[in-house]
Length: 364
Image 1: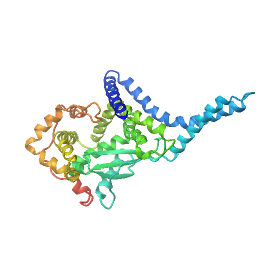
Image 2: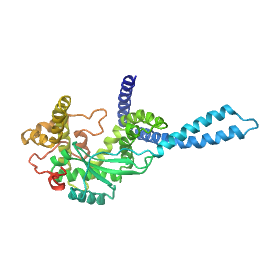
Image 3: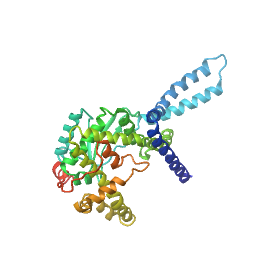
């Protein structure tokens, strides 16, 4: 039964994703309206339970005392609705979303990185970064974790992938970080960033670690389906938000630097997808220790594989690659066109590691 539901959900995601992509191109205004309504539906589901408590109690009182003869059948129904809603509200009160996990980066082990983050948040007038952690992935992202049951107040966590910061040169990393911070400052992209950030927020409500027994099931079951549908429909919004990040980076860096950063990120992404992850998946079935070693040496794999004499080949591969239906990252061709260029460019002679400058060796 679980397998059939999962298969049905995957098929439905494909339909929703295809429809959203087509709609975003043919009728962009209609797409943004529907995406906004879909996002608000998640909020409405959470607000519904305290509202049902109030409505249930009012109708229960009317059924018992509001008429000459008590309507016990209606009273029983409204009592059941109010009681069930109270249980859900009780669980939501104690709901604590699970934030991203990683090694904390602080003044002791990454003072240079934190100083850079502070400078960029001042330049873009936000966002407030509450925590900086490292991960073992090739990534640089900001994740928002709800601090209250209704996702209106968040803790912002900057997740810095060690393979990312160790492979990227200092200038490339600064440029990428500027784009990410600018993207979440929401100065010119409030709607698309709000829709994008909810893509990682809604799944937190169906996380099994957050199940708290009787009363939470209506929340977890709903978001177990809703989060998948929402993420499929908002892929175009996430891509537009990523493009906005590249535009923000151009405010602090020249066009050539942004083009070099964008090309480098996408070339590495394509190389990892085609050469690295297939090997990791193969060894993950055999030996976890080998898997951990492969992941820890991801930046070295990139340096070994992306030699100056093959950079041109991998740039062509990256330019020819299209984003998958559920991939929130635009293709290299889209990102290049967004910043006003017709071709990719990556300085093959750039050397140096931002990680060696911005964080201590024991943190990396």
